[in-house]
Image 1 (cartoon, rainbow, N blue to C red):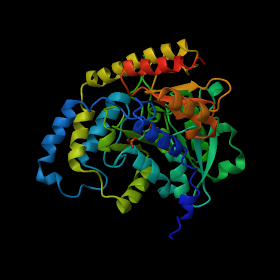
Image 2: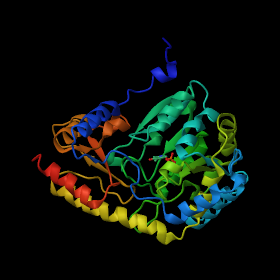
Image 3: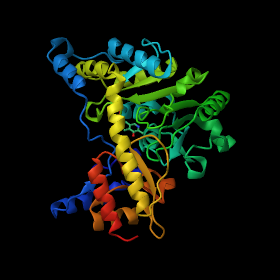
Image 4: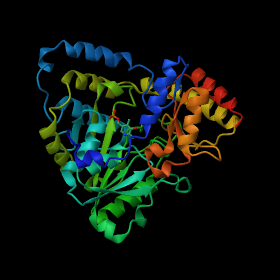
Length: 387
Ligand SMILES: *Cc1c(COP(=O)(O)O)cnc(C)c1O
């Protein structure tokens, strides 16, 4: 009776609907499912953060509407963390806004800067929100393929002139979901130079900066000279501190970009619960050992899983960040076919690469958010397929 708006009707079909349906059927049949499909940590939020929340929730001053831009004390904690972790100076008054999870900010940001018909350069495969936020703002996503031969980095210099003229924003996300690829300083330098020359906003999604296993820690784009002229960076406490359910993130960077996002937010939400922001301050002030413990768990799982997958003949993309593995589907299958086979024959849920965009075809993504024993059990089931 009530027709959906055009912006909903033009959304790409929900690729996971079929998998979700099958997953429900398997669970009803009593299958012992191993779910490697979601990017949601299984490890609980560190106890000091939970304790801080308990204390904060008791305080009546936190029960009222929070400020739109976030508590100053939280923004100050973000500035201190950025300084400590990246050596980047941020003014908590003008260069930081608190988000209700970074997804919220990523989805709302284009509303502040994209007019109907403007182009947003979106990587593919990618976190789907870049493209969808663009569409909701009336913009046109222009796809930048992420290819293995380029280390899953976008070739932004290949964007045709006429597109470039209409382009407003480019999205980048390293360490990358879903491919796990990492970007180096030289990539960010070229990107910032190019964006300044062409007057394009660089929106960097740094959700996985703390999930790394090598000696070199992933960098913030704001470490690049001149980045603050054109860049905004989205960050989140979700992945670093196992806080996906809490909904707390931040956007930092160029003050005009922050102000634009802030204007949108003032008109659509009323900020995040102050008790959660208080807990967030505790999270950002945790000793590094706490985060290291989390990394160590993922590292063990990662090493075990890569070894096991290779042992059954699967090809894993080698990187040293994120809690995902990006794996090639065996010859003769599409991503969807192979993921269906894993579900039907092995009771394993993985995400088909094309769920992240057309250039994800030929791959599937597994999460490392279950204990090592379960990961190895999954691989034993795959071995039974005799690929
Ligand atoms: C998980 C994730 C986010 C968002 O996390 P929030 O919980 O909304 O802060 C953003 N970008 C990528 C690439 C992610 O994987």
